[in-house]
Length: 129
Image (cartoon, rainbow, N blue to C red):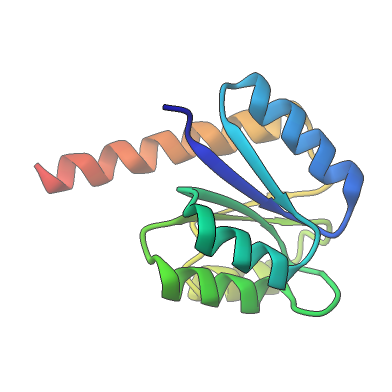
């Protein structure tokens, strides 16, 4: 079964790029252009991973992050931001974000984030054994 990944970002080119790359890696990709839609898609599909932009109109990424973690604390949430701001990073981690990548990102950046994701999962499995 293909793993679902949700990408929430208000920039279409970012959604398209994530979609292409993640599909290429064998994931099933869901996208949302804003927080409320993202939360709704999350509720319906329960993806195991969410890539989430911080700066969005309507509802910012922090609010979305809190909601997602309330629904399912086990979901891996990887924050994407074009701001590379240490303060934002600290805030996101305090709200239990699992990782952080900066825009604009290269394919390599996404590869690294997916590699860290697999390592975190492996550690969790080892702890559970």
